[in-house]
Amino acid sequence: MTEATRRERLRVETERDIRRQARALLVEHGRDAVTLRAIAREVGITAPALYRYYDSREDLLRRLAEDICTDLAAELDADLSGIDEDDVSAQVYAVCRGFRRWALAHPQEFTLVFASTEDTLGSCAPDEDRSQAGDQFGRVFLEVAGRLIASHPLPDDLGDDDVPAELHADLAAFQQILLATVNDRGVAVDETVLPLGAVYHITQSWVRIYGHVALEVFGRFPFAVSNPEPMFDSMLAQILGEMGFGHLPQP
Amino acid sequence: MTEATRRERLRVETERDIRRQARALLVEHGRDAVTLRAIAREVGITAPALYRYYDSREDLLRRLAEDICTDLAAELDADLSGIDEDDVSAQVYAVCRGFRRWALAHPQEFTLVFASTEDTLGSCAPDEDRSQAGDQFGRVFLEVAGRLIASHPLPDDLGDDDVPAELHADLAAFQQILLATVNDRGVAVDETVLPLGAVYHITQSWVRIYGHVALEVFGRFPFAVSNPEPMFDSMLAQILGEMGFGHLPQP
DNA sequence: TCAACTACGTAAACACCGTTCACTGACTCG
DNA sequence: CGAGTCAGTGAACGGTGTTTACGTAGTTGA
Image (cartoon, rainbow over all chains, first blue to last red):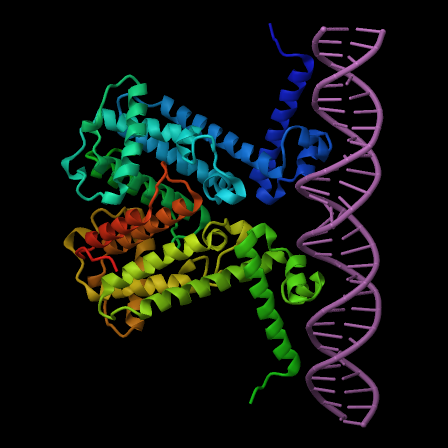
């Protein structure tokens, strides 16, 4: 059955062990504690052996970031699975709240993946020509955004008028990615249901969601927010409202 | 004239040297390169001598973050000095664009100050009961926000209606800080010109400005933005527009 | 002025780090 | 079986933060 040889099986097992221990160190003691020697100690090997699996510590951290992206995507997918297929608004709430919850529960991982400069880590999925559209986490957000678009006629005030001309080309590229995502789900749509103004609004929504979450993780709100959750929820309600969705009862 | 003794003069000079070299290392080679031994080498002393100035490397990094805040505030103040005292809209543009420009030009410093978890660095000004309102950078933003408020009747749609009830207390506290900032500038105002809805809007504006800048620094936009500046400017125009300011020609 | 004191800086040491290299020994395959 | 592959080892190198004991220059008070 298994084509893999004994050596290959042991290798994947060891590699999984390495990543698990590295993740644990990252979560519990921060990025600086993710040390080749500490990982090796936990796994039960010596530090130089890790070079049979990774080119360097930086390379290991990069792979770790990819793992984190994938796991986050899986967690958000799980959140989505419990929600009515047709209730797109609830899906948006679930993904955004899930993202915030995950970030607050795993600040070190959030920092590694979403607040590291390219030169200290590189992208999460550098194969896709410097766009993040290829990684797993981006996929989940794209899919929900796609469902949002496909399910709902957008209000007229999301026309292309307020979109800066310099952004037309970039937004058009993102528009194609979004449309392709929607079409992949079997819903046939074209540019007419997704004007550049809507693409721009989706981008601005990501700016706000990311901004809120990062500010909360890093404690950089201009004043002490004793309970940031209602602020996040009301921001989501506003974002959805601007896209023509009415308010939603809090799940 | 100078009350300081020779030893005290040498000390402040050495300390300034330490911070300057540490800053240079941070800017040029990133946080991990800010090494006690590297700093000492540049200054011309040995590493243990640094313990006469700082409790630990972490303590040094914390002080460094404070310096960065102060310098950023000075830079933004300089940007403001060349702008008409009465043109509040232009002042907002100047501060926000200055913040973005600084962040892009100094990503390592931005990361240290604005994208570090509290446990790895602590706040920039931890003396002010966990609020950032006390640091220099916050001061500049507060002052501009204060001028914005004092100079302009806010539109009616910034009423308190959409503000979540759970945020009333926190927003009221921030409202008092903002009003005190305005009053410090000699303009007498009270709560009537600054409803909680406006305070909330200012907070949301910070979320968007910070979100955009951080996404740009960390390369985490959902698609490749070939020229993010028009996007930032149009966001500022929208933020100001929502506060009742018309569009502004680009300086 | 001179002794007592303070405090900046040093060298040595410790335990840790990433990384390289020569080597062993178990596994794989013809 | 024999040759080859490769995960893992131990030793080493140069680097790190931090502590310790110590010297010595600057300061201070009598």
